[in-house]
Image (cartoon, rainbow, N blue to C red; front, side, top):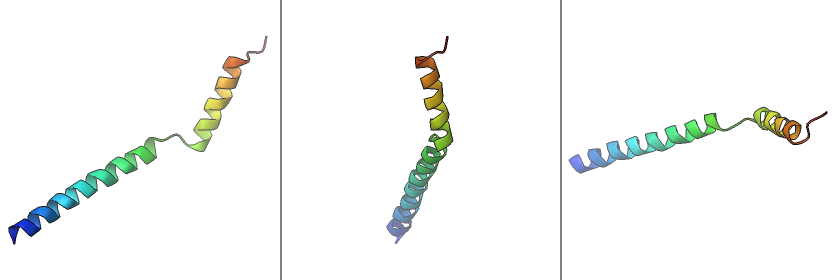
Length: 50
């Protein structure tokens, strides 16, 4: 019976890590506004007005 609790706890820990990393990836990914700002900055760098 102790194997059941061991595997249950290990499964919960692994799922917690996977969900945590997924949440971090979601929070660290650039938003749509960030992408638009970056695209505008790149266009200004490539086509500087004299």
